[in-house]
Image 1 (cartoon, rainbow, N blue to C red):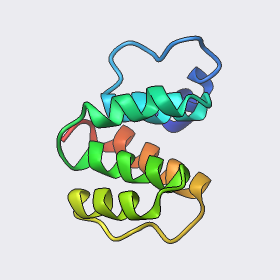
Image 2 (image 1 turned 90 degrees about the horizontal axis):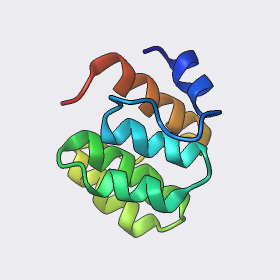
Image 3 (image 1 turned 60 degrees about the horizontal axis):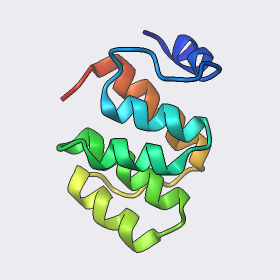
Image 4 (image 1 turned 180 degrees about the vertical axis):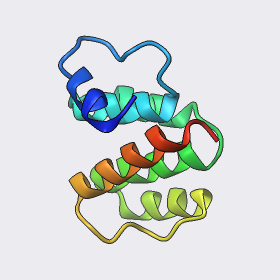
Amino acid sequence: MDLPAFRFSIANDTPIAGLSLPLQALWWDAKGDWTKAHACAQDTPGPDGAAVHAYLHRKEPDPSNARYWYNRAGRTPFGGGLEEEWLALATELLSSGPR
């Protein structure tokens, strides 16, 4: 799946089958459901889940919790806007597959 198809799928009622939990988190976030997005990120071990988790806490906003999750992901905090970070994460996750 590419980014345009992923973004188009946000018009649906549920995520497309087979999406990784980090992508499901971004999907629910785009739908405006932070709670479902957070649950997906929280259920994902590893750097992908931690990176999305950091983004969600940055959006919340809870900067100290976001910093914790950026550290868990092995990343520096994102310096751009929230939409820019969402796009960067979605692009990265769609192109790399689960890690």
